[in-house]
Length: 153
Image 1: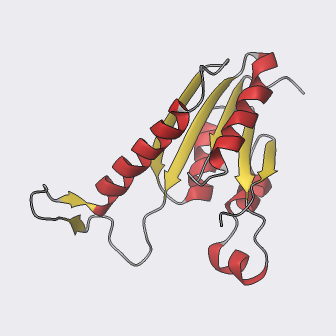
Image 2 (image 1 turned 90 degrees about the vertical axis):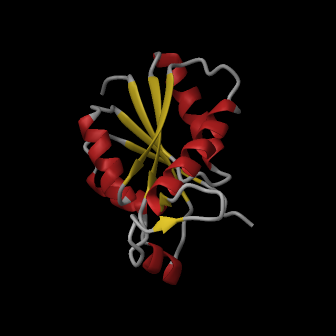
Image 3 (image 1 turned 45 degrees about the horizontal axis):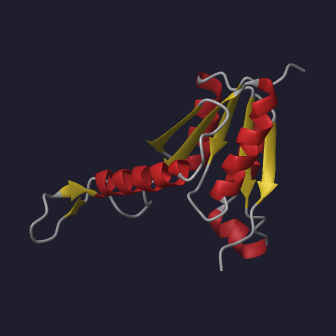
């Protein structure tokens, strides 16, 4: 198996996201791999993403625009906290169901490795929320490294 040269790092912008990015950067460093951080914003199932969000003095924006702008700012802030990463690092926010979007990006971008966090939910929480990590692990064309991320308190 060849050393990774392109690492995809899907994050959910939770507290544990920083640890996952740090791990991927350190993992990619000896190989000179590039690290690509992505956050997939998933539109709510029961609300139209083109629903307008407005307040006095604001320009009306769709729910999707507001969510993507907010996620983009949060992701940029997270990336800025890394002090001069020793590998090429890019980041972006995409719209779509997280598991499918990550799998599509991994295949289209010809990534060698996916590094992602998992919350380790069990029982009803996993049934209701699903498991993005499980979907990616079971369907990815490349190896997937999962890191247990402690739940937020």
